[in-house]
Image (cartoon, rainbow, N blue to C red; front, top):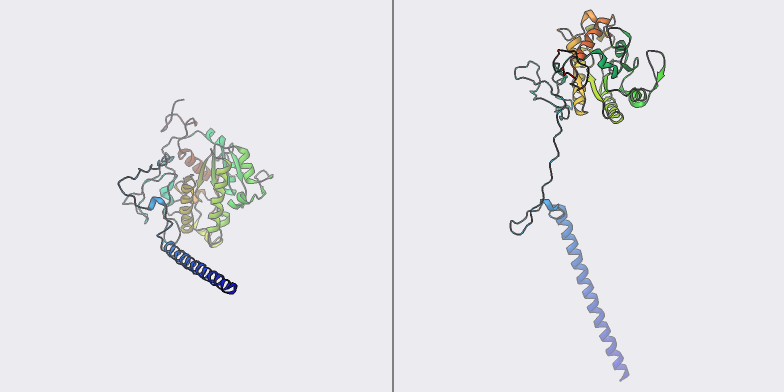
Length: 336
């Protein structure tokens, strides 16, 4: 009798374990199926979308608050308009402001024409004392502004022979026109300028190869200046023209290439919130070459009369600055 009871007990246990096993198998199979279905729906994009992209029924749904649009920055500078009859073989542009995104072309270059981006005249003629609070950054061309009486000898200078924007970015120790040495960015910040005028590039563009590296350094330099001097107005000056014969010894310095690079500099200036100055208006002849009467024998540097033209252009192409010393009787002159 006891043997039979033991047999029954074991039979019942076996049945219970079989049911447990079957239940576990069913649960496991269901979990696998559900997991696979969920993964497939995720891959198809049905699940995991943001709540804002799901349609809501009109009844019973609460109105969602709309984000407040960011305030449109007030334009700091009006630029020239390209008229439909302008014979420049370029796209037709509307008035651009300093925060404008510049249109690109299929080859990766900008669609900007530097002649459209230049700071227009007509905002008054500043007195020479205006430049006492200015720092000029550049190379030997800019040193001429410091040396000649026809330039601006009372301004501040971070100008170094044979240097480019990489000297500012890399913290290179450079020699000044007085023979002392300094770190360009440190000297620039120490001058605490109201405005910064930049002309760099001629020295690093003498070879006819890619100028992408030059533009990358230039953009990084502008970022560094903006970070270090957030309230300072920055002017990017175009690379000036050269005489036609310069190309023989410096194959990278010729009219068409310099104009393309100035297109890129103009676009870079607008993207970085800077003003662009087209010095070709003052220094180029009718053929787009450096005016022969102001060119030094090397065809690159300027005679003193060239600095007179340069300074006159700067005086008539500043962005209007309240409180600046304007020549009485000129446009936008305000009695203080």
